Length: 149
Image (cartoon, rainbow, N blue to C red; front, side, top):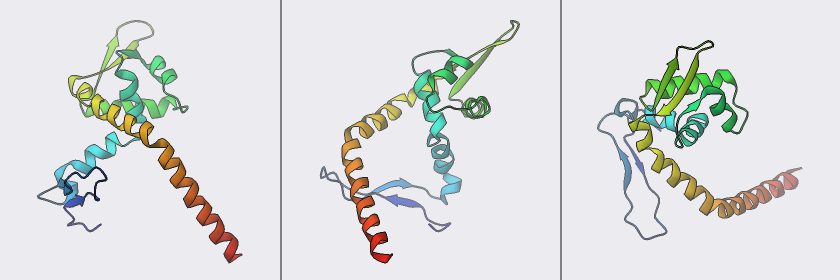
């Protein structure tokens, strides 16, 4: 993709919907903000944090336990700080010993939960098709390796 590329085009839709540009920026993508936002929302751990916080406030350790995939304390700390910086998560520190910290989605963070749910629904719906495509691809790759050996 060139530095001046300003659009991502959609492939023909199976549903018969009109195809066209998905993203249009007047300036290079680094300047239109899409890449910056998608980098954050496309981050594996950020999505998990948003999913878990969609049910309400959680303390740090509760959040860490709920996230499957063995996220380290450091990675979770970095992730919630980034989400807080972006205005998606609110961090509340209670003056206790030791300090208690709770995290919750802001209104902005809650506004994106329907997007995450739509992506999860799409993933569940298309999981068998994707699994079959992977199997077929791997089979062709294995045959090609065997043929070149």
